[in-house]
Length: 502
Image 1: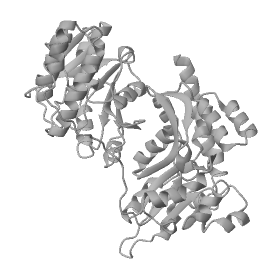
Image 2 (image 1 turned 120 degrees about the vertical axis):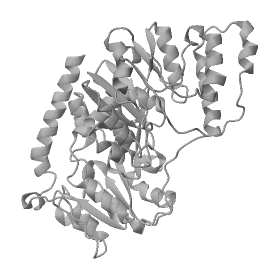
Image 3 (image 1 turned 180 degrees about the vertical axis):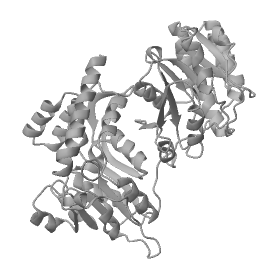
Image 4 (image 1 turned 30 degrees about the horizontal axis):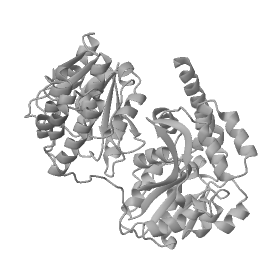
């Protein structure tokens, strides 16, 4: 079988057509879309095609490519861009046939289009000097490639425009058998001069960095290859402007049916260690740091696989979509890891995340954790400090914030928010009634929409949920008995599979 990895950033208009083209192959494939934290509807559109979607741990095509490789289940991996609508129907075959036939370890595509200016003026001149064996490649910057996972796992994925030329050089230095494949006519959008300037600099920097022994007589020549002199900073930042109203969901109590950290500990055979930390460590900050250390050595694909195995609250997607239509910004808060929260945020089409940062090096957890300033008060961990931060950061009054969380863990947030909603509270109802403005006891967030009702001509209805489900049943009963058991078994199976693969 073959794994197809599609790194994407704001490609909601094209991603479904790309996936449909890839599915036309006769090969047995899996498709993994790696979202680079898009701000459009890319994730929503990709999920309509029933493919796996994961969220990159941070922005950058190289990181997305590497994390897609980590998530891939098969030895042969093909990468395609998510913004090209002119792929031939047999694009998968063209990229992978030479590997399947045993003729190559790495395939670099070329296509019918005039070579770009960075290729002609920067990449090829530098290759001809430093790597003459690679100078014949027609389009060394092409992003449509295929390779063996066993070799891709040994190379470095640059996290900028140098990623594609860097992979070609690394594969060459590993002694891989590299061939070119003609994939026909490909059309994509022309890049701006600002983008070309950035690409020129990053491509040349990658080639020079990978060249270990530059002959002294070539230094002057290399120094003169700087055909585009000015570089404008290019960045894409998520922002929420002119907000008027907002809903913040506790990820582990109002979106997930189970706490992520607990189920990740089960999946990675760290359950007893986590229980020991929770039972003995009273300082919240130290407890979080010790918990993060349990996941040292786990890669992004493994961590997100756990998140994907935890069922979401029924109807959460529909509730979020309706809130967005009504003008609410929606966000997630968690004591857990930002990369997990962003992954779920993108799946649900939410706007922002408030979470701790698990440190990753080459997409593998180091076991270290950084707590953002908005979770700190006088040097101590205090999640309640987040509301003043949100109010200032997004220019919104706290009275316009709805907080949805647990009656016990979120007492202060439920009290200080404009409207505090206790969802399936696992605590004394008499106490919860004192701190929450609204209590939802059934396994549905539909009652949340009563706080922001639609106009009479536009009524919203969630998919039907049985009366048995919407009685006064909290997570501690229904999900605790059914969902928890299923997820627990799934986590155990995942853990056993990981051990068997080692």
